[in-house]
Length: 210
Image 1 (cartoon, one colour):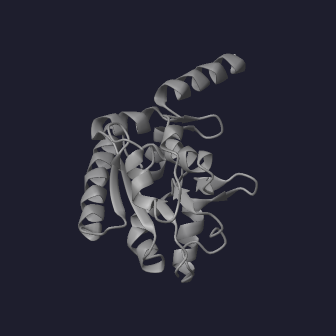
Image 2: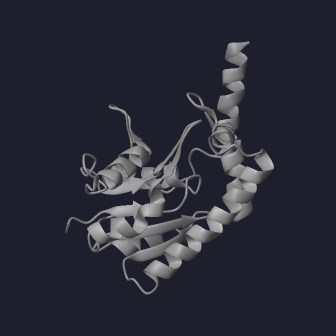
Image 3: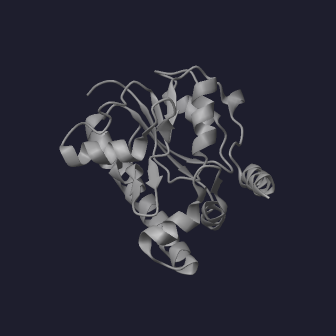
């Protein structure tokens, strides 16, 4: 496949919403987590295609930017970012960005993540893997380290790869990486879906239910 894409292959809660907005606000078609109108979850779709021997983006290949490939319920946890090698095989001329942040803050962000529809993320994860909260956080720490090592090793020396720390790196780094094919307005970069905003939403929902 020759069509160029932009894949954010960091784990969820590493600025995926903000990165999606950066692309969308720059006029680059982008999808984050799911296609709202259908809804079609990226993580579930990618794994279903993988199991069926289909291209990973079969049925969802109309976008340029892709971020947040995770789907977690009480029964299953799917993380399409772990299929980054297969994505590269199918889109070798595309751009791959490993979005990262401080590991301890990432674990805290995941643990505090709240969805109006699905509730606390860590509660779903605990039920899915049948582990205590402490054991889940230990597992996340291990998975985080392993993912960074695997991605860095695979893309070592690749000109179409960038590691982007959402807490410290300027958005110009992304704009420069993809400049030959896409125009990204780095002024559109802003932090979204943060722990503070999620906490306010959770508090509001609790008050509405009282």
